[in-house]
Image 1 (cartoon, rainbow, N blue to C red):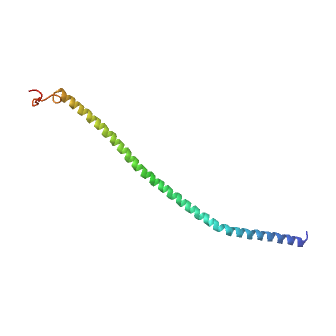
Image 2: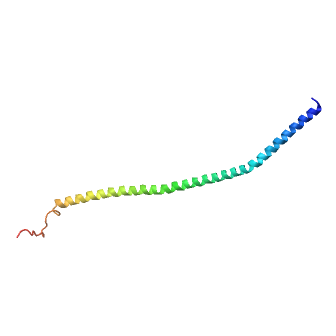
Length: 117
């Protein structure tokens, strides 16, 4: 190869590199605004995810309170039903005792029978 040919090859390579570098710079400039929008979108998504997580935590706490209250009310109702059943049984026993001893179900000494003349 002659010096001229080598010189032309070097110039050709340098021109190719300059052209590639210019294309790369133009693409980078185009992509820079796109990259900025992507970064902004990513930041927005992270913020939305954080807020959704906070809402979910708050909702979980809010739902736990009524659930706890419902369990408490259920427990009280069961206790009240048990106490009521016990009172009912005691009342039945009192009525039976009163009937055995003649306090209920038979006329007392003041009772006047209006059917007999």
